[in-house]
Length: 97
Image (cartoon, rainbow, N blue to C red; front, side):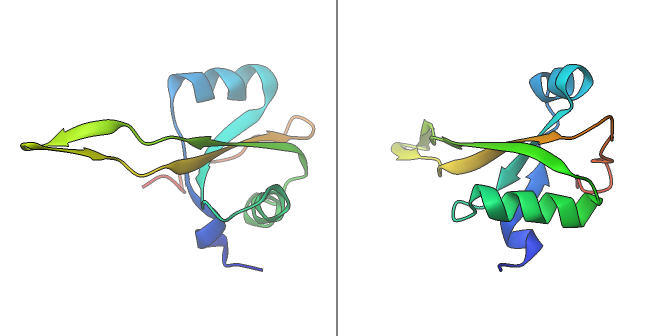
């Protein structure tokens, strides 16, 4: 298995993510492009000592941006939505940074 820091890169603290946390107990994370759902589930369970119900992933495509006179693209990255079983809350603030 890969190291946890290659699977879970950082939590995503956004408005949408906050609403999902409060209403549905779903948390958002930026994960490695090579990470699969089984690895993400195992990493979250080990990191936070909780039981994970579901993991949904998607690839966010990089935007086309200007860099000076040149046009380039930002890198693609992978996002995971993790639903935690029960009423357990994750402390994301100690990971963000």
